[in-house]
Length: 142
Ligand SMILES: [Zn+2]
Image 1 (tube, rainbow, N blue to C red):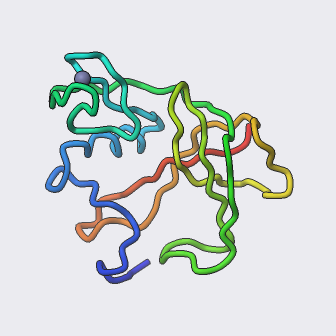
Image 2 (cartoon, rainbow, N blue to C red):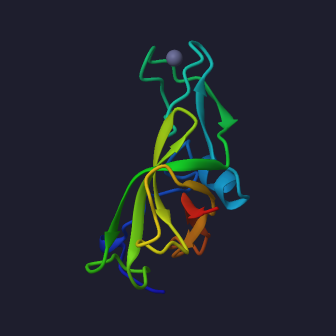
């Protein structure tokens, strides 16, 4: 899939652009991780390069569970960004104490319900301009 950078719907994920790039390499290997402050031990979602509680910029990566529950969802039928086919289900998934905005894959909207269990299923999207793979958090019903 080729498209212009000006309409790129995905964040820059490379080490050139963010010190949080490891999030995406972990996601590519099937792990959902986030940052934990090394000073006050607060776990953030989404991952943060500095702590919202104590402003420290020292953090470590910690794994989040690979399963969660649907907190809310919606279905987008039209106007999808480049690289997406067909209708798309977006959800807020409760993972541990965090609420993760994600795509639901292989999900029939008519069969979904709040509280339903879902498991991590990272979604590969269009490569970055250098040809590196990019991933988004996604879940699928269990
Ligand atoms: Zn902190």
